[in-house]
Image (cartoon, rainbow, N blue to C red; front, side, top):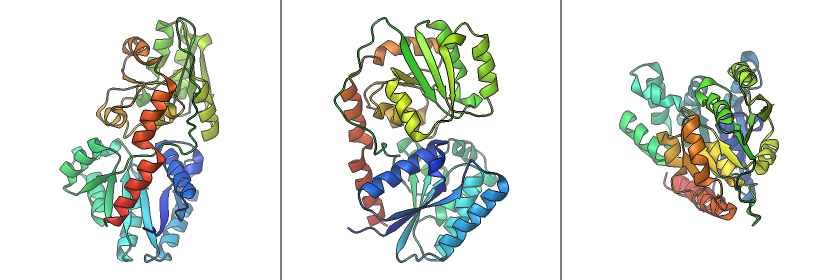
Length: 343
């Protein structure tokens, strides 16, 4: 089946900030590799102010208005608040033009919206009704959305980075030596990175690299400075996608005990480099990482310290092979074609 040109409407995938940007960058790379025509239309970027973002959105809206629905399908990637409003406006335009809008929902904030009969729940319902097909990241979210909105959803997970290598080089098994731990996230309180600082205090063998930035960064830096592990904790700031990949490849384990997440793309990135991960025991992430090798679930510093030994020596090829089977390029393209064909 020859696909129409796919117009992807999302935040700037080149920003490298957030799970949506990473997911869209991965999707675009897969489409390009498989010679499927597409175009990324940026509706917002985290690197600019409100006025410039308004202009960016207006440009995107006009691009949709003057596009041909007979020749294109539209993939909308929706986050919370402003992103949700922008995608609802675009979905309305597409529906009025007689086009096909496929909307993927990315934010854990949607759970709060659905629990309240208010404005944001109404926006979510409107977007779902105006979309030709609504896409959930996993079965957990599919069940949540279908129950709350009484609309049909289809599962389309975020794909594995197309640049991930599947070489046979194995990591050296860790015995009692130093342990290089890493995390990457927007530095906000809900990401629970403070537990990793406590972990470094608890386990003197751990050196910790923290990638990212955000409103909680100063608090974390102060906490690290005052801790007994201050000389083993490094703040890296925001890095490019390639720089993150490089840092992951040098680490022994990825740990992020976030209090909420919609999918857990960052854990997929880490696993794609063949390193084990410790993720939080929250439903959306458990669903995403179910049946994958090299994964343990823990929340507190003490639990994480206990979980390290469960996964630290998982063979690299086992981690990569299980990940490729579930989230690889072939799986993504097959599901994408099925979704578009069935509309």
